[in-house]
Image 1 (cartoon, helix red, strand yellow):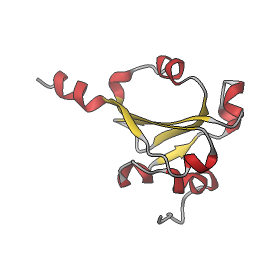
Image 2 (cartoon, helix red, strand yellow):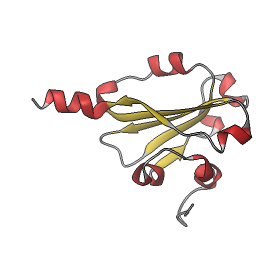
Image 3 (tube, one colour):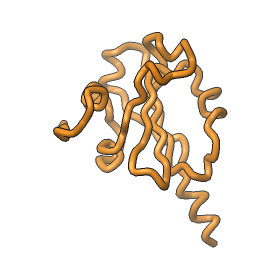
Image 4 (tube, helix red, strand yellow):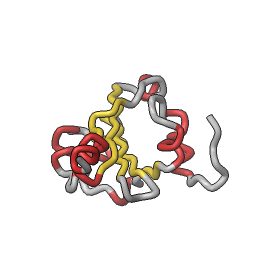
Length: 116
């Protein structure tokens, strides 16, 4: 997969694991480093990858090693400002490299309703 020369080390780390995402979204993902994570469980390998894409931002945030996706989604504020949320569930690193992201939130639906 093509990598932009301006991508950070963290972005390059995950390029091979972005199956199932649109190219435009792939280009704007910034993965949140461990030092900025609030839950200690997010420092332990394994779990779910989550991509949160906002309508009004030029970037999307990527989180790896999320252990409880249900609680994680409950913590997201202003869902009406989100374009989409994608998740990828895997058990091993090998499985992670071949698993696809699936869209679990489509904010364009709410945006279209509010324009009616």
